[in-house]
Length: 456
Ligand SMILES: Cc1cc2nc3c(=O)[nH]c(=O)nc-3n(C[C@H](O)[C@H](O)[C@H](O)COP(=O)(O)OP(=O)(O)OC[C@H]3O[C@@H](n4cnc5c(N)ncnc54)[C@H](O)[C@@H]3O)c2cc1C
Image (cartoon, rainbow, N blue to C red; front, side):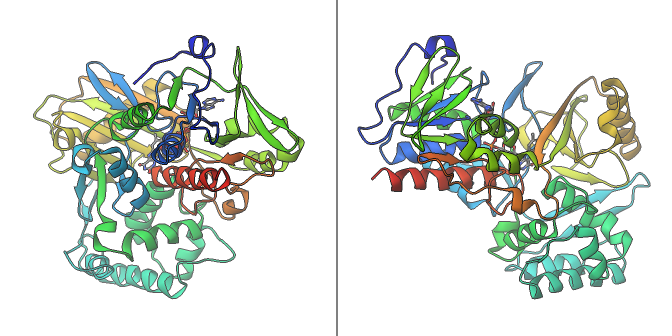
């Protein structure tokens, strides 16, 4: 693995691109790195430019005391097939980076009342249906209503046209408010990072389809047990560099060069990198900045301006080592904190608890100390026997995901642009998925395929 700050790297030439195509990938998040890995697998030698000092983008390792943590707690699904395939390509064993847990949800309120859904080991979707029917903490009426929702979604072929807020669809399916509070709202925030009142029904239904109507293992949760850098970013860098490509950290692309309707290269602070293909794999706000300067790309850039951003907060709390949730993760109802993860059980770091708040809310306006205090107090209400945490690290990612609101698909560009050789990758592109690692990986694979096909 190399570390080439821009000043140093810009003095060097782009690596020869296998005599076929000079490919520059702007952005070393999961989308850009996946595109580069796939190209390297096919014998090309891409150059990845990453503005930050480390790879991974919105899913990266961040240090805390003596620990390697992530910039935000992530949770994945067994349905993330493209991501699992790219890990195989990299030689990363799933079990070395993820804990796989069969579908089981426990959500707790301050009164200690748990809602518990456990899916038995049956083929999908019978596991979900049986889990809903036998869920505890819900009335029979609520459980039957949940089954009605699933039946309706299936009858609608997991489509909703025109797209409407999920709250409207839930209402049309006769979902009682208590069920929305205990099940749909937490699931929607976890999957789309948007509350049901604003969430896209289309995108939510796709997640339901992929998680619960494929193979049984698709609904498994995969929770990182190593830092996110070890999952894909660092192995991807090694893979790319071992095959003659390069990953340049601290190298920010400042301009796209277009000549005669075709991409010509990428401008850095001190140099220009010539390219026959550029994969722009940065977040939508950064992509818009680079696209705006070109008349033929302005409509795409304008569309990206219409994609809202949603925050996610993660607080890592270090308690004495005996403190444990008793399970890997637990949902919290009627609180600012939505999910708690026990890193003692997940990654052997006893006493380390991650608290997650997805989506927008008044908590984003609180001062750091006030929000931290609120989180500590809410956890104390859920687990009164716990002592105060010893240390806390709060990470607020204001642009964690795009806002998966109704009609958002219309703002999401595909990989192809009007400029020859310029491709768009990233979780925000038209993957059909919400802002997820799977969406990012899929988009990278699609771009790599375009580059390979058009450079033959
Ligand atoms: C706190 C948090 C929690 C999340 N939880 C989950 C979860 O539980 N499950 C899930 O699946 N997803 C989750 N996500 C979303 C997931 O992390 C993203 O969908 C994914 O990381 C996006 O990857 P990307 O490659 O498309 O974009 P990015 O990660 O944004 O990568 C773009 C890269 O481009 C670089 N860059 C930008 N401008 C330039 C430039 N001009 N030149 C060079 N480089 C540039 C950036 O530094 C960045 O590294 C979460 C995100 C956050 C922030």
